[in-house]
Image 1: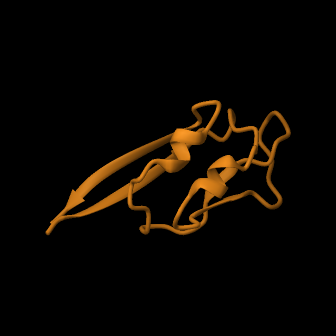
Image 2 (image 1 turned 90 degrees about the vertical axis):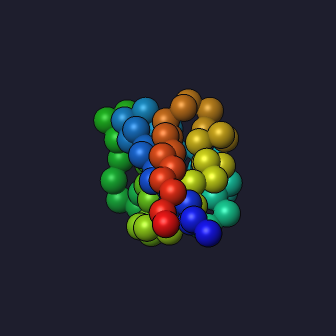
Length: 76
């Protein structure tokens, strides 16, 4: 049975740090940056754990600004 892997790409400069994606992620892979801000002065969302995303795209669905793109890859 093939396993699906996901990859999250976040446009940090567009992110307003609303935290909706962090709450929506069922695997708790996302968090707001602690000490960094983007060029608008917002703490942005970032992936905290690599190679665990299952590609569910819950984060991208709830993002009001479309800052998140989720890629899926089938692994054999």
